[in-house]
Image 1: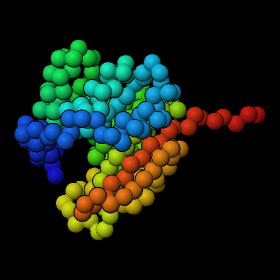
Image 2 (image 1 turned 30 degrees about the horizontal axis):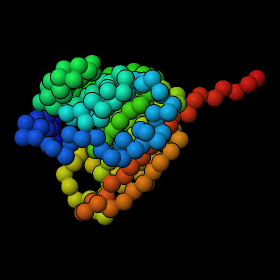
Image 3 (image 1 turned 90 degrees about the vertical axis):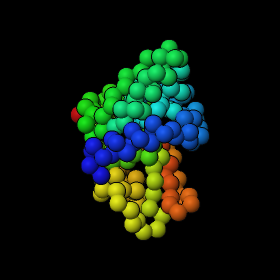
Length: 199
């Protein structure tokens, strides 16, 4: 799907309303509280890629996290901006396709990717994670054969593919399971600290 068509598609969806995307995903909340919260008691920096109307971003901002949200939909970013102002929360909001975002090296303590796993930018995403930083990801999975129309870079992941794509992270949690006519993968990884050889 071309960029303009993708943007129009998501603008329309967010204009119509997506109630299922208004509350934080239970897996995200559980992952954050179990693995991330204790390591960053005073908050940190987080990038929410394809963050939509901010179900995770707003939740994190209330916990003192400095939040950057990137989403292709201008409608979603506008709605998120209104909610942030309503709750007096400061978020950095960018109406961009994730592939257009300037991933600065070692910028984030946490990166969140829910239902947008772009193989083409995976290396850039990982480079933006600080050592000891976490990636929390949930994505669609081809449980059987995939017959959809998504472009190769964002079609659903194959079984165990996420482990190959994110091999430079230490896997903290990985689960794949069928859901209705497809599958879902839930993943938490931590970026190791750089190790230097002693001479």
